[in-house]
Structure formats: C-alpha cells, structure tokens
Length: 363
Ligand code: GLA
Image (cartoon, rainbow, N blue to C red; front, side, top):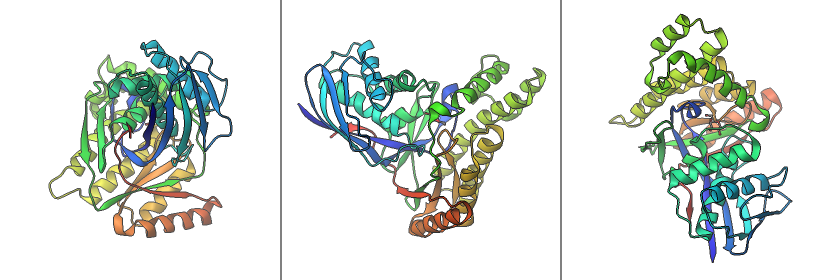
C-alpha cells in the first residue's frame, strides 16, 4: 500500500510552559510540514531523509533504536505503538520537510506524528487523534528523555486552516479559535539553535512542580494570580519557585484573554493584543527565565517595526519569536526586523510568513 502523510509544525500564540502542568495553550499548526511518502509492508522501517544523511533502518516494533540521530524518534514511535498493540507491519520510503529544525517550531513532534500516522495506516490500526498525540509525546520522552507536554503533538494533529487551537492540557478538551484574516503569522528564527535535550527544560519543569505543591492539588489553571501569590507567601515559597508559579498562573489567564480578544465581535483590539503578548514575553523572560537576549531583541525590533503583537514562542533557550502583523505589511516588517537584528548581533535571522494550516493527515 502506497501512502503520503503530511504532519505540520506548530507555532504557539500563548500558553508557554503551561502544558505539562495541565494548563491552557493556544497553538496553531502551520503551513510547513514533514511529509512521508512510503509503502507499507515487511517488518522493518526503512526511511531516507532530505535533511539527514543517515537512513533509518529499525524494526517495526521499535526495539532496536539507534543511540543517536533522527532514527531514535522513529524507533520510539514504533515502540510506543507496539505497546498499544499495533501489529508490527513495516514501512519503506522517504521523509521530506520544509519545517526548520531547532527553531522551536516542533519539527520533532511533526516527525513523530507523521511516523505514527503512517505506521497506524500501514497496519490498519485505529487510534483517535489524542491517542496518536499521546503516543507521539511518550515517544519524545523515550527518544531523547525530554519530559515535554502534549502541546506540540496535539497541535500538529488538531490544527485547522486559519484557526488556532485552544487546548486544555488537563482535560484534553479543545476548541478552534478563528484567527483574524488581516493578520499574518510572522515567525522570526533567531538562528540560535535550540535542542531541548540540552536546555533547562527539564529543570524548569522540576522547579515548577515544587512550586505547584502550594496549590494543595488545585489545577493551576483554576487558581487566580492573587490567590497563587497568597498561597506562595503563606507557604514561605522561595523567590525562584514563586516566580515559576506566577508565570504559569498568569500565562493561563493570558490564554483566556487572547482567546477573548480573537473572538471579540468586530475583531481584536490591537493595543490589548499587543499588551498581552508583551506581558507574556516579559513573564517568560523574567519569571520563567527561558528567553535569551536574541529573542528579547527580536521582540523589541518587531514591536518597533509596527508588529501588532510579538513574543518568543516555544520552549525557549533559543528558537524563534512569533509576531502578528498586518498582512499587507508583513514583508516590510520582516525585512526591517532581520536588517536591524543583523546590524545589532551579526546574526542572520530567518523569516517565515506562515498561515495556520490543517492538522496532520494521510493524503
Ligand atoms: C516545548 C515542549 C512543549 C511545551 C513548550 C513550552 O515545545 O515540547 O510541550 O512545553 O516547549 O510551552
């Protein structure tokens, strides 16, 4: 059986570092994806890539994962699906991608989701989209040991053209949020490559877990910022965990506020949207401490160049910013930001003007 699977990357508009504590996120799948063209059959997964020299050759049940390289993700997905009872039918074919790696646009999640859909189709094994997302999320942990949340894989599966997805990572309930037609998604990659395996991601997660103890079991998305601050003070929580907690609690509130702006009759108020993004960025920079000077600079330059709203996006420690920009001005804003960035840092930033796209599917 010949098949083609497309799995998009994602950009997150609000709700950063909230997914692994069951909070709210607002990502959109983007029109940049990983594509698999393959034939089902045999008991091995044989894939080549236009990005990486080494071809992948692993068993269809994933037990012979290579120690490094992109084959780890492929084998990990196969192993997670094997645990769910997928018959061990293999694949052979090629993977191509127009999704930049290391830019915080979830290229690894897109690969995991694409491989998962292809393996399910190859074996006629049915899983609902959240089942695929969870298997792919577990595969990320298995492959590289990063304790990431569900956002990236869920966004790659649930996205819809011209919409963001509001996902409650606690209940996994989700709904589509229309994006204004006159605003383009401008993604500017700092050129500082981010690999979550080497970043402080796991440390931030552990710090947050310590802080969440003061909520006495309440979901952070159900606690207001003032209440969280009182509980932190009453428990004598230290400065660092208090700031980690404040980020998560205020960030959940910002997801709701951005949804309200985007769905307001008559469209969003640009000033309010801009302030919410600015507060989100400041919170990631100062309270969660996952930004880097290059991302701070790109946000400042985007706002100075008349972006409606801008913030870092993704896990941080490198990667990209996302800006909402009036569609007819997006090329001009992108060019102004990259020129000023290069002048100030000597680095070249890559610009991606994206649209929110449909989630992963077999085509
Ligand atoms: C990475 C992780 C996600 C999420 C973001 C931060 O992209 O894979 O699960 O935690 O960072 O919001």
